[in-house]
Image (cartoon, rainbow, N blue to C red):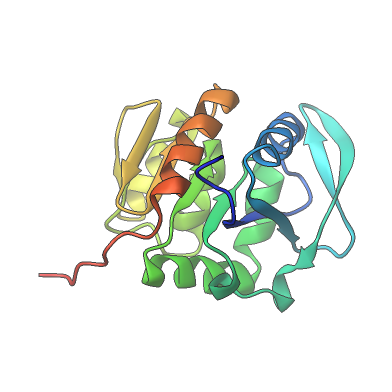
Length: 186
């Protein structure tokens, strides 16, 4: 039995999500025993980005405007420059991510998805890993950037995203651990 059996996992996406990451995540996460729901800014389908052009369409289970973080146990945000830009301009992204932070629920941001925290002013105080392309933005937003392939800081798992399968394995372990205790600021 999987350590994610019975868990509800939200995968937050928008048009421009990285096609190879989305394909791998959906394939692997559905094997975990978790209930996996794709939450997107567009109704019905999300259009992925495949290196230099628009790619495949993926089904969206729920619209972000009608979704509550409280209804899920874990959050995964996928990479894709266009996806992150679109999510950063949607007020519901901040609302959902804030609810996960406040509840200490496990979150995983793969590749440049970690930049979403900077774009919606939630990066301050986190230790994060990611691709070198987001380092300056993360540091400017108050995060501590660590030079690691994958890094866990409290409820937040981040990573460069080059090894998607390895990141998913780390995510499954992280999500299986459940919520972390929220410590008051000193």
